[in-house]
Length: 530
Ligand code: ADP
Ligand code: ZN
Image (cartoon, rainbow, N blue to C red; front, side, top):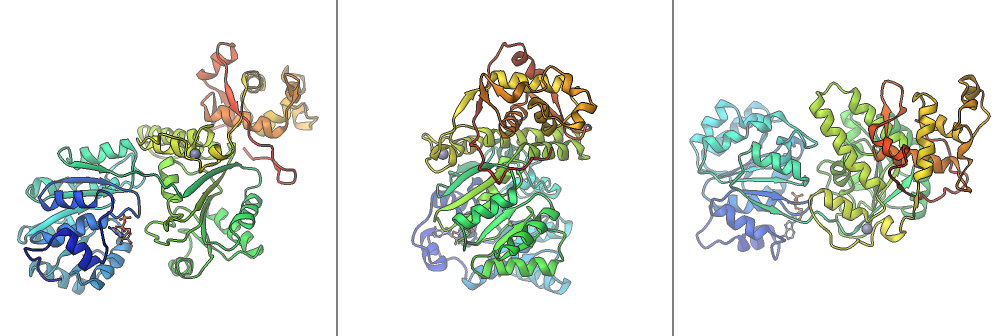
């Protein structure tokens, strides 16, 4: 578009250039602030409309708006879309040939760009900074600002340097934007980017049309198949798995059962990934089975479900991944299978990583947030939003715990049995074995260790006269692990150990209420590996 005219207003630009009637949420306020030269920190969920918050001020302020973005793959799309609307936009990143890059720099110098998208490592070169000194800059937009945070899920070291924008061009307004909502990340963005003076705009992160549900993991693939057949036989959706191997196996399994499923993970050739992504976007009813490598920037409005066969490592990650469902506002499902094996596996991955202790502590803390969500007997949406510092005054009515309230029971005695069984067998075994001991199974392995003679052998057949199944015992162990009364020993192949916190319970000084997981229908039961 040609240079801004004096009589232009944000609303007119919104109508004329972008073709929308009115602003959404805080957009108008944010835009006014930035046009007046103020700094802003914008927290808005994906799809909330962050882009306009810097695009419109860039069109109304003199000079070029510089947009920092880590997502090289998306710059092209953004720029294409803007160009179509008649906005003079370009991008600079490592995907351009030197000739192309030079042409963009010349356009920038000539003042013929409204918006320029730049990768952070490119922006922070001496050469580019000198260039910026010679032109009027309308604003700096720092997209995906959570990349500056080590607490966040997507740390990029180059982002730390972006603080320089402020010291070198103090008069240029800055607007940082992110869809990552948790308070620690937010605080880190403010500190690291010196945004203490910036006004914060926090939108609600609630996605009311998404129904959240968790089922106890038994035979995840069969459970998934049943879920798809029952509720989404023809719908497009995403199935997330932790490992590449599981992605491949699950995709094949669904294909064998006549679902148009495609695998996606970082180990596949780039061509294959591109082709699968294109089919997912273009065709109807494709089920993408993927690792977390899939999804960033995927804008498909009619994704009807996001299923997790494995536990994500944080609630933040879960929110982002499930947030890809129901962008069109129509009902959508966030469905997950969850079992003790997931907790063991994720703890092990964190403990075994080469990261420093501080980082591991953060990761374990985040995992606890995720477990709190899984084990809650209250409204899941309330737990989730609460984690993001937001309060939902009433239970949502659109999650499993709202729709089928969870029964709880006094699990004190059962927990004591479960804990002493760990103790009596030397804190060297996983939950599957412990459950066998509690139920007094006649197994050669148990006899070999002499555990058919410990006091807890067979005491778990019933608790207070009520018979207990293996499923129920596994649920007890899972909840005790999630509550921190039992730790998982990473060196000991997932052996369960007692923690300090288990003592009051063992001494009878505290009680514990447990959730009663619904009994599984026969046929789907299988032993959860630990
Ligand atoms: P985000 O960056 O927050 O994920 P986008 O900026 O990509 O979101 O916007 C999401 C979608 O909403 C886009 O298709 C955009 O054109 C549309 N949109 C944004 N603001 C408005 C508005 N005021 N009215 C109508 N549609 C809008
Ligand atoms: Zn609810």
